Structure formats: C-alpha cells, structure tokens
Amino acid sequence: MDDINNILHDNAIVSIGEYVGKLYGPEAYVKFAQTCKRLNRLLLPAETESSLSSQHPILKEIIRCRIDYIDPKRTLWKLRDSVTTLEELAVFETWAKTPLYEDNFIPFPYASVEIPEDMHEKIAVITSIMERFPSITIRLDSHCGTIAPNSVPSSFSRSRGESMRMFLTHDHDDGGFIRNISSVRNISSRVEVTGWGKTVAQKAARCHSHPLRNLAREGRGWVEVSIVLHNTHSLLLPPRHDVYNNVEGDLDEDEMSSGDESWTDES
Image (cartoon, rainbow, N blue to C red; front, side, top):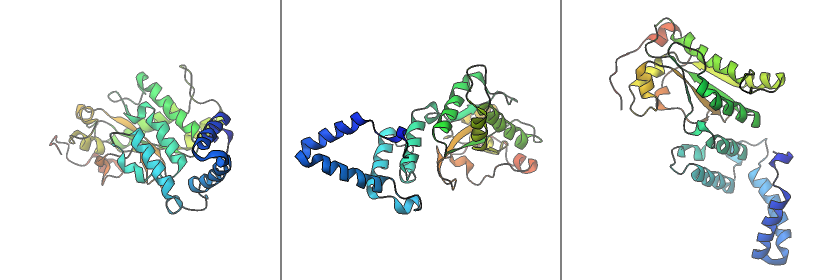
C-alpha cells in the first residue's frame, strides 16, 4: 500500500500536525514524525508474517471500531475479528457503500440465464470493486428454482453463474464495464462460480430467516455475490447464510435433485 493513492494529502498532514501542536507544543512535529514511523510498524506488519499473529492490538481496535461505525446494527459483528488488515478494512468499507451491502442477490426470471436489465447497475459495482482491489476474488453461488426438472438443476444453476461471469468481462451497449483485454482476463480469472442446483433453494424456501424465502417458494433462482477476503477462502463478505451448512456445490444431477421438496417450514 505504498502508491500515491494510499497517501494522505499534504493538507491533511498539515492539519493533523497543527492539531498535535496545540496538544503538545513546539516539539509536536518531532513527536508526530516518530509517531508516523510507529504507525507504519503497527498498522502495516511485514508481509512475511501471518495477519493474525502480527496484528497489533491498536490495529485490531481500529478495525473493530470502524466496522462498528459502518455497521451500527451489528448485523455483521462476526467480521470484527475476521478482518485483520487495513486492505481488508478498505474492501469492507467500499463494499458497505454499495447496493451489495443491503442485497447481494441477483434474481433471475423463470427458466432463464439472461441478466435482468435492472441488475446491470449492481453488477457494474462488482466490476468497480474488483478493479480497485486487484487482490480480491468474487464468488458467485448460483441457484436454479425449486420447480426445475430433476435432470437439469446442477448444470442450469452453473450456467447462470457463468452468464454472470461473461457479463462482468464483456463490453455492453449501456457503457461497458471492462476497458481493455488485460482487464477482461484479470477479472475473469478472479471470478469463481459454484452451481448449487436447487438444493439450497429448497432449504431457503423452508427457512423463515432467509431473505429470498418468498422467491424460492415461487420457484425462481438467483446468484449470490460474495467477496473472498482471505486467500484461504475462510472469509466471505457477506458471510453465507446457514442454509449452506452441510451442502456441497456442483454435485452430480442425482445428488442435486435428491431431498425433500415439501414446504415444511424450518425455523
């Protein structure tokens, strides 16, 4: 994080220095310079160290306070201890300012892999985040409707995810998202697609707490967009709903179509 875009403007540094001067007197700038060196060591630990082992308590508290400020309802409170670097915090803050913060779902019409036109702006946000943060990966969890024939769920749900990937990496008449060939290749290689057939949709239809419960009960499918923050894929933004527990993606057709399709509600 040493490029010019990640450095405070000179005017901001002067303002901070003036404030410190009012508190500490004529030696303020000497103390300020030494403090900047210390902040560099505390907030930007060596890349050779693991994030968790090198995270200083001051950095941890900064991250927790910032996330609490951005997410006052604490709907994502579990992330407070999972975000471990300033770059991850920057990704979190950027994501929280987009429509994806409130809704990371792309619903599809019945039996279609076409991207609904009213979703184009939301998908443009995904591309913008990927271009700003080259280290992140996007996860697309793709689902088909509960009324889909048992012979097609796995392949059809994955086709929806692939349709999203293609849309992210191609120019469009409404302005286009990708600016050059290298960007296309870069974005495409950082998009992961998993087809869940209708297994997760069936569970969502029975789950009162799932935000797309009604959509699932109607028999429609969707794609969920998540940002992979950790290289270990241990942290998704936002975290997955519990309906994914004990379910594997990209299963064979027989596996994906098995299971109870009744509407017995779950808590």
